[in-house]
Image (cartoon, rainbow, N blue to C red):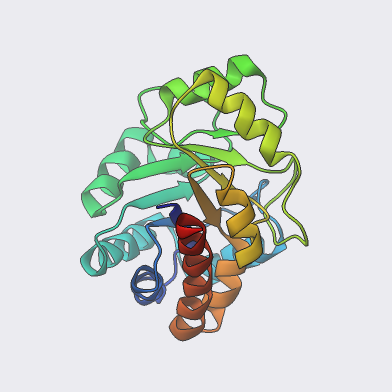
Length: 235
């Protein structure tokens, strides 16, 4: 079965949203801790981060939300943020407090694979990554490797990026770690096409948009993705 990862920004209502997403078929939840200068994020997630910061979602409150999410769901929860948040809070302290709150792992978007090796985390690679960087990231990643399908920011796109296929192929040559693809996957057709190439998909911007409309709409959207992935499994 292909893995479905859903991204949600940490907000007071995120525990309820996470529960709805999991009940609809999400296997992993990425929990965004907002940052004021999210260089890898497109307009949807950037605006979600701005709303979160305006609502007072600083690191301590995000950790509380993370704990509330863990009380509702048993799937892996992956804290996703930027290195400045770790710098401000303290690297060892934030890792310890996040794990105590229920985090399974971490994604630090702007942290190269060869820095902070003491923080076990999911590594990211992109179409521009060299074979050497692919090997390094795959050898140090935590559980799965995040394939960034585009050389740009997050956000819904009309078509699945053609760069995913060669990136997945190159990565398969250097490692047998599970590969999950993200950035630009926003509808069931994308999910199915991507899942033919990799072991799982990550959906961010479109999930955030659905979450803004409430748990029912998020569940409907996640269910449509789950259906596309499950149909591929029996095709």
